[in-house]
Image 1 (cartoon, rainbow, N blue to C red):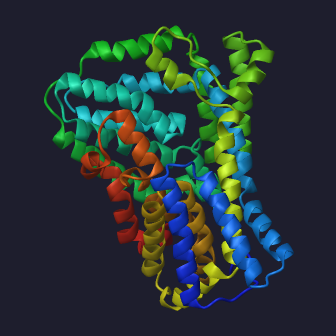
Image 2: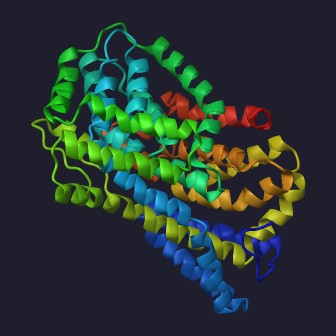
Image 3: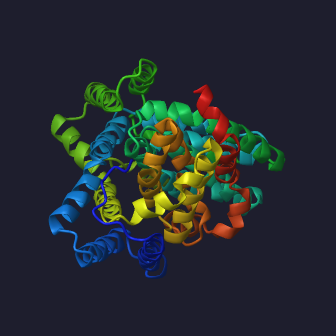
Amino acid sequence: MFPINPKHHPSTGESVLFFIFIVGLISYFIIELGTVPHVPILLGIFVLLAYGLMKRIPFKDLEEGMTAGAKSGMGAIFLFLLIGVLISSWMISGTIPALINTGFTFIGGTWFYAIVFAVTAIVGISLGSSLTTTATIGVAFIGMAGALDASLAITAGAIVSGAFFGDKMSPLSDTTNLASTIVQVDLFDHIKHMCLTTVPAFIITFILFALLSPNETVPMQNITKYQDALVQTNLIHWTSWLPLLVLVICTIVKAPAFIALAFSSVLATILASITNHLPWSGIWSIWFNGYTGNTDFQPVNDLLTKGGINSMLFTVSLVILALGFGGLLFVTGIVPSILTAFQEKLKKVRSIVISTAATAIGVNVLIGEQYLSIMLTGETFKGIYQKSGLPNKVLSRTLEDAGTVINPLVPWSVCGVFIADVLGVSVLAYLPFAFFCLLSPIITIIFGGKVYKKS
């Protein structure tokens, strides 16, 4: 039932108390001390090792459990490294600049909030990073809102909604890859299945922002600065769309995610060499270190300076530590004991989905870390879904619906602190207007018991 066999069987009370203690420890370091999550997770590993040794679990078994936990994420780790290459190659081939430039053409008219949401969503899918999207195009939209005398809180809500829609649905996103890999679901099957709940949330969110939008039009000079700078890069050509087209075709024919991303990366790299006359030595450097924007407009430089294997090492190291931590939670029997206590009550599909969503939200609130909300919840519920006959893609979808998009709504979370700082709008101010993030878990809970039968 469990991915790692427990070597100790603590009582439910002991497991719950120890789990609360160790989650509280991690929360204190991340929220109160503001440390990067790597440090408290490593300390959590130390505590779990000490607990295991006190319970006379051989160190070899503890080490094997930790290694087995980390090993379960190797697929995600390889994908993360490849995503760094893909982003770099899509930058130098002009694919990402072309997508961003196209998004700007939709700006105008009177549906300001709705268009901010839609364009941010397009950019978010292009970049695969909610925080990068928020810190670049999001900052620009906040400036436009100020010029229009529009509500900064609603604008921020639209930015956050669009950025996390993009983060959730982009094949370039680390959280999307993590959620699919942690429960062994093909990346593109995962994205396709998420459409069942994400598309309704997107449509409702767009309508709400359209109804709230002011009547004034957006000042075109602000948009022109971005578009001129994107053209100035000389990266955008008609061939820039080919890597995206190849990725779409690979998705349609259900090619494995690693093959699809690798094929698109290689094609983008070859096109960059031909159309933009980049030397191969420079290309290989960009593969590792990422692309650096060099236009006369710094906001666009910030938007395009991205990618590379090096940019993914933070995430890779965090995933390894967190999965090793999860492995220890299983081998010491803490998580299995908790699951055994209430799994008899989790027989109905709806109760399983609701419990999954509640756990993912709870980890976000307690720890403030979306990676941990995905990894810990995924590892905890994988066995329950298998026993109940539920497809793993239902679990991976729920992890994103209630894990990825909730993090920016928590004031002390990693995303919440970052977004409030770069946009200058507090989390509590934009929270009521982050419609997409609020709707996603509600829709997955309401329809969680039905949509899996149709997929």
